[in-house]
Length: 162
Image 1 (spheres, one colour):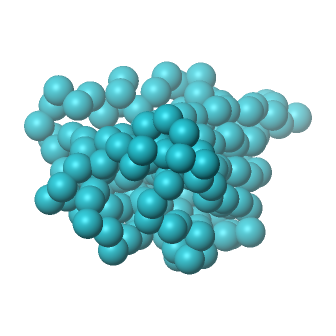
Image 2 (cartoon, helix red, strand yellow):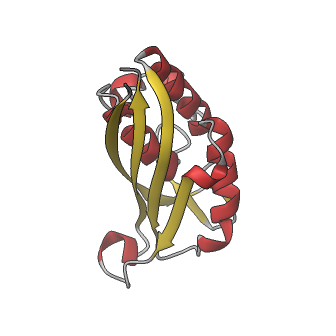
């Protein structure tokens, strides 16, 4: 019998000038992008941490340390594909679903959620209907509200071979 596992992931990156804004594998027009060693895709990073956590495999910093030049400007969707391979080696049977929330005051992310879902679904891979994405603001509160950064939270349900 398959074993059900839940994972949770959270990530945050600062907004900075002269970087592209890549979220969920989609480049979003904005005057700022996210700071980070890789492409700083905050959504994909949260999803990777949720999947790794569900499988008991640690976090993305363990697998892709920011101290290694190998990961500089890395495409996070490619890293996500690597995470899925690691899960399969650990006995992944199925990714049941992924549910994630983006927190950003600006830019408005809702118009890009469908494209993000499609890109993420092809990287995992699952049918897009198994990925739920939402975007919210923080009503001008905190670092997100001051437009200093963007945060993402994700949960997933996976099954492992019993």
